[in-house]
Image 1: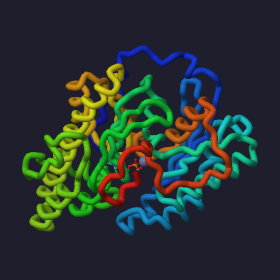
Image 2 (image 1 turned 135 degrees about the horizontal axis):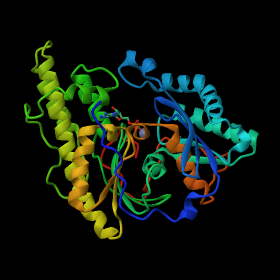
Image 3 (image 1 turned 30 degrees about the vertical axis):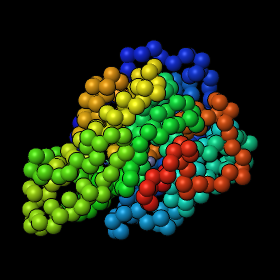
Length: 374
Ligand code: KG4
Ligand code: ZN
């Protein structure tokens, strides 16, 4: 993986101290895809007291992608042990917790049910509030665990299931500015990696292969470039990669690296172009907003991070990037979303039903495609 620029702390006053005091401690559980994760976060600081992430890569590798039933079974087998280990690492028991949060959607429903059921059982047994966390909100708020980023901010959420631009106006308050009309960007990385025979998981493998490649070699389409608005599209680019990959000889490692680099550059250019338009929309909506935040697994990509750094500079926004480990799925972001909700008194009943689909901005029109969760 490339070198990740350090989190650039915006030159702004910190949020009011009242927000970050108080010894609130929350356990967060994440099981919506192929990471079984738990973490304990203290609002004071804020600090991650302990975290454990078990990636199910080995379980899914033989299938070349995440198999929902395999994922649900693996979450079920491991989650109790991971929660116990995380409490041990933090040196606390259930009694010290102020709340128990779990991703309650969107995501693979079998896994989500494992996490939610476990969290509810623990909440009931320990007499603690349960907090149902929207996985996308966990990504959206994760930056505030590591940097002083006040609302409102512009968010580019780029993951395996999602590709959206949102104005984050407060906890539970999101306005979607753009979304993908076909594939999510992480999905495009995974499919391109598969076409190039780079193995699984695709995103990091493609970034590694691209590091040795020539990004100028293949003239691939730059999806949506120059169009008004800030929606995304990646299916045309994927088709172009398929054709270019089919024309390469199987032993042509150089060609594969060049194609990976060209693909990565095309994606970065498209994301940058769309985000530039969104920044203009955001400045009209929220002239006082100062930050561009990037979250989700694809935000771990160094070439994309660098492209977005230039967009932020040109748009007069400070770029705030969570470190890569906080960009891919993890328990700390769920615990932190739990803290943000709990301190506003937003808890949930034990009858809360997991949601396979749970858009952050329910008022946004449905995108004209299927297959992306929000
Ligand atoms: O946020 P995440 O961990 O899970 C979802 O909620 O989807 O994102 C996973 C996605 C996968 O598609 C993965 O290939 C992509 O993020 N990804 C990357 C990189 N690391 C993870 N894509 C490009 N470059 C990377 N370094
Ligand atoms: Zn995610």
